[in-house]
Image (cartoon, rainbow, N blue to C red; front, side, top):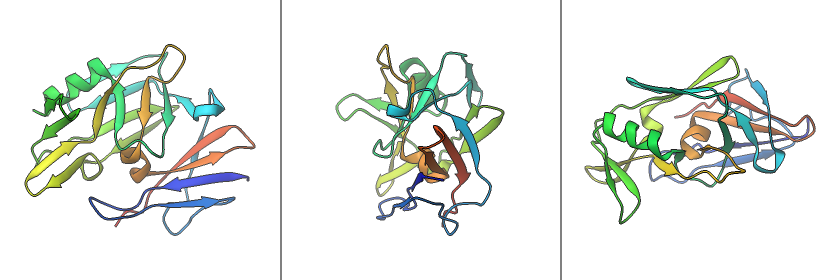
Length: 179
């Protein structure tokens, strides 16, 4: 396999991250990996068909997401981001383009990809930026007409190791072994 695996393993304000070229990282990633075909290799895009968070759910046969190792948040369609924020009483601050949330909030995001469900836990979604002040790792994303609807940034990559299988044009996900 000619893959590239990227996993962000640092939590909070702690430095962490690792990229393994040409193989798998069995120390930081679970042995079980599920692959999904990509729709566009340039951006590592893949299809997703539903999203659930608490009482909110949405479905579309047209959604595509991209794995983005540099995006700090989950980028969601704007209307969905606003609905999620409302559900968890997160307040949007236009000045810094962030959703502020109670540090004790426990949001989870569940994505349907292929026949599998991928859950992002609160530890990867609620980020303490200062003592007692937290943000939700979510941003409203205005998708270009040619690109993805969702951006799976650091919260997803911390939860799931991403394996970029260049030769077979597919992306694989395995659970990250977080501290």
